[in-house]
Length: 117
Image (cartoon, rainbow, N blue to C red; front, side, top):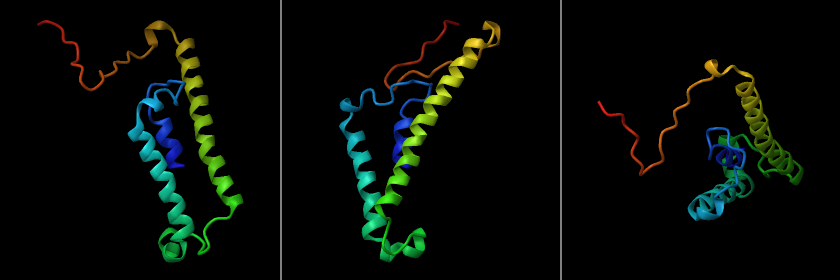
């Protein structure tokens, strides 16, 4: 599930397109693929050695168990989108004066705007 969480946490302010910009960030993709690869290796190949430390079966997971894990992980993508929609609906229903004043920090490399004293 942590790989799916990596994708959900790329945007923190309720954005919908979590896949946006992935093709512009090869390092992120390499890290994600590496994470998936090492999870499979730890569960399937190193299972006999890591049985007690990871609380897994010595033979690893079956294909049905992998499918269940992937479905739970992918479910977090759907849940995050539902939570984003609920947040937008609540903000839309709020009176203007009750809405929070969100101040987003600028991206790295940009200096924050300052007001003259």
